[in-house]
Structures are given as C-alpha cells and as structure tokens.
Image (cartoon, rainbow, N blue to C red; front, side, top):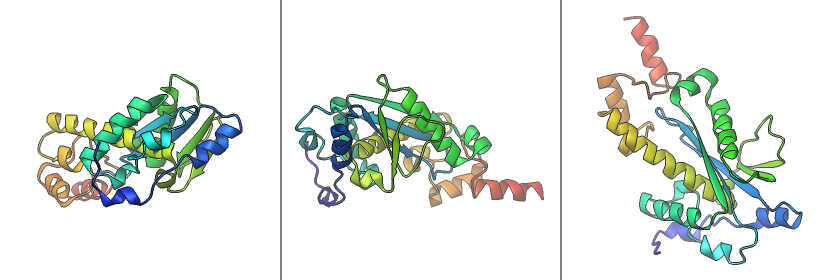
Length: 222
C-alpha cells in the first residue's frame, strides 16, 4: 500500500495512551471520533474502534492511519480497509439532521457516540474520545483534545466515521440531486450555498444551522 502524501511524516498518532491503559489491565479500549459535526446537511456519524492489545506489530500494521482530515479520499479509503482488517471490532452510530435540529449538534454528537459504542460486539472497558466527554456513560473515559492527531485508536475511529459518512452522503445525493452532496458531503461550500439559493433546503438539511435558519427566517417576512 503506497502513500505519497507528505502528511505521513507529521501528526503521527501512536499507541502511547492505549499502552498505559493496557498495562493497567484495560484490555478493550475503544477510540471514538465523529464526522459531519459542522456540515449543513446530512447526519453526524460517530465510530468506535477497539484495537487488539496483544498485537506487537500493530504500530507498523496501522502506520498509514492518520486523522481523517489529513488524508485525501483514496488514502483514507485504504486506511478504512486497513482498520477493518486489523481492529478487534468496531461500531458506528448516526443521528440524522432532523434530530440534530431537535436536540442540538453537541447532544447529537454524544448520542451518535453512544450508539456507536452500543454497536460494539465487545463491551469496552475504557473510552478514549476526541474532545468530548460522554455523560451518563459509566464506562471510564478520557477526553483528549485533538486526540485524532495523537491517539491511534481515535484516529482509526475518525477514518471509519468519515468514510462511512461520505458513503452515506453519496447515497443521499442520488435521492436528493442538485445539491452536490456527493462532492461537498453537506459542508458549507459555495456550490452548496448556490444550490440552497436555487432549490431551497431539503429534508436532509439542518434547518437550525446557518445559512438555512437565516434563509427560513427571511422567508417568513416575504
């Protein structure tokens, strides 16, 4: 598997956090991250990944894995396959736009993470989470700022969440054409803004987010 990006020399996540916890007796450690938190359309998707604690060459096997935001689509897809091949298990949770509008994006992100954790076939003994803390979850946990840049299991979760969500957005593009969802994945690009001006918001859009909420408010005065 060849990776030519210069990013492979920077922001290399390691198993340092996991090894400390493994030595403390926590064998099943789930790294957790999300994708789509800032998008204007589509779900927020979270993933939980448990890496094997008894694989001595795991660093080498997963050496291409990075924070998903640092990888181009093809290397990211390759890393997705790599994580699925070597992870002990993984789970994904998604919260749709309508529910995001009802409860807010941060609670929706936490909900997606809880759903991802519940999908794991093996209950995690410890959670390593990118930035967030999960309320009402009794499992011991640690929120790590920029954990997807430093912690390998969180970086692996970021890959799973991002690739899963991108594939969902391509499917949604087929059912809601004209917005360019397959290209911008629901994020706030000029293409997306122009499509909103032309077509209005769809059921896939987050009506509580700008500029959709602002456009809806202005329409009330027309």
